[in-house]
Length: 324
Image 1 (cartoon, rainbow, N blue to C red):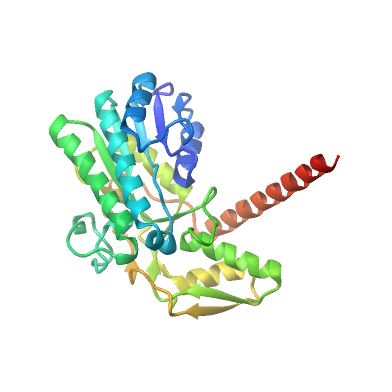
Image 2: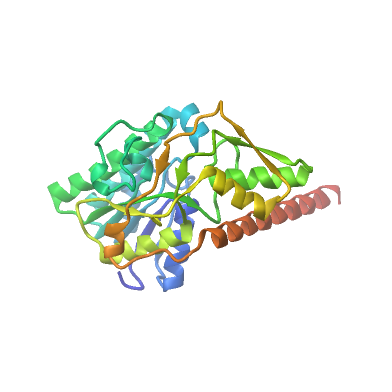
């Protein structure tokens, strides 16, 4: 890629997409293409093909999708499988139609079997049943990997796939009905502190083991892979280090609301018992993460506080205008 290459970031407004845009801008790329949901419905092949014909991107970061935590996955399964299948299908096909030089498709570590051997190597894909709480999303993501492989095999396209672990960082979703565990815990402890409540409910037993990667590290890995990786197989992106949900909750508690006690609601599902990626293949390409989890959580909480302050300021300004 050159500084003036036409680079399309599909999903630029989301957690990952916004981080990819920041990373590209910091590296000096000047021709970054984006389209809002209002401008382009990525589920519509005719719209997507028309957009590709008009804009002719040379490189594509396919990081768009419908995402969420256990509750969102279990209550909106049709949306999760349909939206993601269509988004992957339309963008990959249009990239082929209009001769994109290279495409990076971003999946998710939930593609692996529930009982996968830990750490999870890339070879464990499709070796066992999926975790039921996110199988709809996982199936769509697996289809995305196979789609890239099919276009590579049949048409010789340089389409690659990367599978990140659990992500967090600025522009994350802090809505308790649809967020992932780390931002949900930040929100829960913050709300408890604000309300003067010294007990916070945590879903499940606290025993599941999870790995977390700051989204700015992921964006750096995406650019690295776009420049240095080209293979039929997908590649894991993570830290290779995990901790329990209890340990994560305690870290966030100690930062946000130290007096709080943890109460585990064991009637709620735990999800996969353990999920940590084997990142041997990624390390072999020369890439490693740089953002420490404690520092990453602290900066993410500060971003959350800044957004709250901004929204409160905007709300007050709106009220002043309305009463003037």
